[in-house]
Length: 222
Image: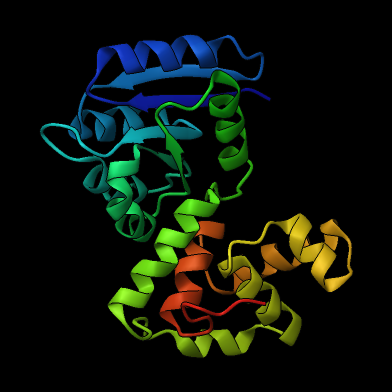
C-alpha cells in the first residue's frame, strides 16, 4: 500500500530534497508540491494525499491557516505533519488545535522523515518529547480547562479515561502497555475507542482534548 504525500514549503531546495528522500522509499510517493499555503489548499483538494508535510512560515497563507482550511474540506482524510525548527516551537499549540497530527524538524534525516510519514499515515501522532513538554508548558501558561465538552468524558470507561490521561502525558502505546501490564494491542483498542467516542481525529487531538477538559493538568505525571 503506497502512501501519497504532498510537500508544502516555500523553499524549492527543501521541497526537492524531501521529494528525493521520500520517492526513494518503496512505500511512499510524492504526488505534488506547493510553494505557499493557498497553493497547498488547492493541491490538497485536487490530489487528496494521505500525508501533507506543511511548513509554517509561507507567503500568501501560512501553514496553520492552510491546515485549518485543508482539514475543513469535505471528506478530507489527509494527516498533516508540521515542518518546524526549534524557533517555531510557539506554533506547537496552535498547530495541534488546527488539527495537525505531529511535528518534524526540518533537519531530520531521510530515515526519520520517511518514518514520520509512515507514523502519521497509520493514524498515530508524532510528538517528540520536547514538543510534548512545550505543549504542556503552553497549557500551564494559558491556565485552566478551555473546552466546554467535558461531559463527553463521561462516555469513556474508567480504563479508557486512564489511557487518555497517559496519552496526554506523552506516553507511547508501548509505555502505556508496560505501565498498565496489558498488551500493546489492548492499548491500541482502547485508543481507537477513545478517539471514536470523543470524535477526535488522532492522538494529537486527544492530548489537546485531555488538557482542555482538565482531565490532565500541567505537572501531572503518572
